[in-house]
Amino acid sequence: TDYQSGVRSTNGQTEPVALPKSNVIVLTLEGGHRVIARPSGTEPKMKLYFDVRQALSETDTLNDAERGAGETIARLEQALVARLGLD
Image (cartoon, rainbow, N blue to C red; front, side, top):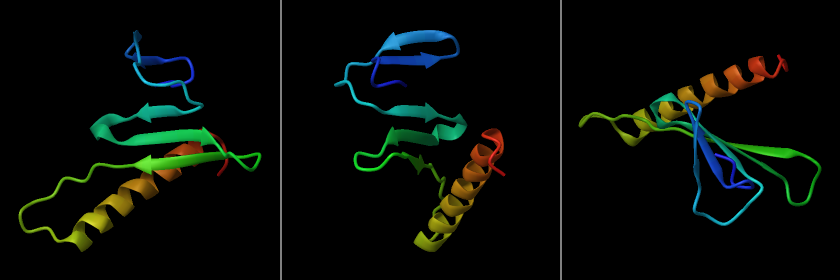
């Protein structure tokens, strides 16, 4: 989703986004995970935010959820670094 152009693209199909324009791009991944990219407002750099979904069972604790989410974030980070050729 490109909030600057107001367009969401999914599998080659586009649709308008009914939100205010902003210099933000959101990559929605399998499993509902997201990588959100935006420029810094004060420095010449890009900021990335990782938003992950962690399935829980009835017996999972908060620590279990944090550990699982942390592992997912680490995998996403490694994949992004490799894809960008930064490794």
